[in-house]
Length: 328
Image (cartoon, rainbow, N blue to C red):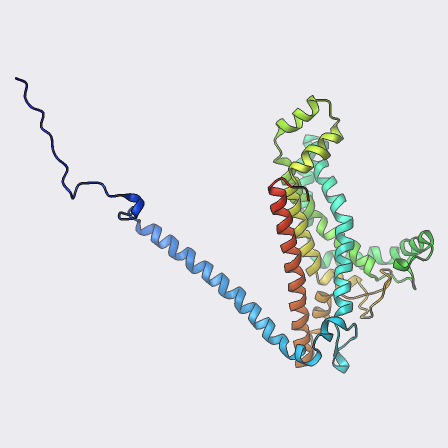
């Protein structure tokens, strides 16, 4: 008779526990605990710094809000010498310069990015990409100096008179011609944000699968149809992110805009005239300002943060739609 096979009944202590109930957890290494501790502490410090910054800025602006009330936003009379703090002209100037910059920079930047990836010879792509990244690292004061030395005389002698003659005195270009103007500030901002749009859009376009490009060409699409009906739509999420970052930089740019915008605090309809922005006014007025004026400048900073946050929110919503494949 064959030997009986010995069987060992599992004891209650040896029975596996139900992992779904969480009764037994995988052992956590000491290095993992240290990693998560550092991660949580770092995140907490970052959140604390952001909250403390916003609270400090808002509390510093309260005296100006109590002094001017809603007139700080609705009034266009900015005169710190007489304690008049109306920021409407500054808000309009900020939006005007940023809109001009984005209207000019978006089509130029996207077209340049597509050209670098798909139209420029391979041997020139790397030098051009490096040059674009170099332009993105140029300090803003250099762009401002170019605007003052090169563009301002050209705008006053040729560009603005030509625009006035072509448009027949259209209100956007009316008034006395000055080299320093809202239009010039918008053009300088265009030059500044172009490298950001080109560099980030180029990276998004380069990630489009080559199979899609070859597939579109194989069914009879032309090169331009492939680029603007296949490549650009597929890369629209990255392009949207690039445009959002560029818009945020245009809204917050200070030194270059302050050098070329003219420093006029009157609200007008012509972009051929001088103007002012929120960030440029903060930089130009802070030195030697009274306590109430400093509070008003803090209020300008709060307004600028609110505008930038709104633009970023809209950009993120558009980015999420683009990632889901929706049309922008």
